[in-house]
Amino acid sequence: MKIAVYPGSFDPATNGHLDIIKRSGALFDKVIVAVLNNPNKKPLFSIEERMGILKKTCGNLENVEIDSFSG
Image (tube, rainbow, N blue to C red; front, side, top):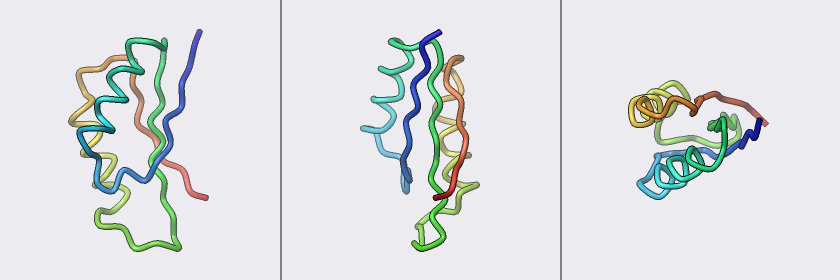
């Protein structure tokens, strides 16, 4: 199984991000979009909002998973 991880802040998620996610979904068996929660920065959107936006826009892609991480 080929798995890709696409980390980023996605604050906000752009059409470019979505294009990369869709293209990756066609190349890999599973794509994990890892949304960064960086406590040292003040984001425009909360981690929950960013994940919600990505889940809505990528909901039709069955092999894409949205998750978060901090670091």
